[in-house]
Length: 250
Image (cartoon, one colour):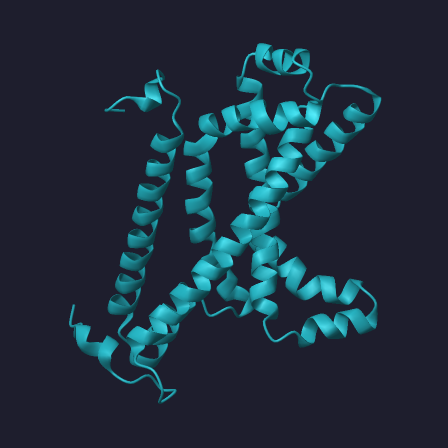
């Protein structure tokens, strides 16, 4: 294989005449982190609401709400993220009124907004399942005791059930956070110049394909290792005394 390795390519000027190739990667990383964090905030908020609603008592209104939330989960969890992204970016502007569609198409950051919405809805369905599982993993005594003490059902969830459930589901939530960072690379298909798209641009302009994607890979790995470390610290901080999580070795 007669491939000419050139790791100095990252300090060479890119075709835009303003940035180096390394700065192009850093700029792509910023878009990746921005889309991932915004999508995660949306996913966490929706996921907690929907996952909690699925554990409400099966009263008349509660049963209907549980079915609607389950339908939401099945819809967004079973449609591939790439398809959802295409639907939001290419199809949705054609379904809304013409003026609204024209406004959506003219948004300066339309690919970024679309990526956040797609990542948020897709990941929220997965987070909702984790939240439901965490609440249902608790014995029924906690909720009953909270209600017996005079707390409303909302207060029982807010002060008792959700704090305990989050301690249980923190490891799978960490995995979902890592997934949303990796899934943000799909946004290159709608024009968002995130990290993978930046590496692809470097490869196309410089023909140094191995260097470009090796650098992107190392950046992804580094970011994910940092996330895992931070989540591990949070997990140990929130561990209840006397439980396995609060021990020295896991």
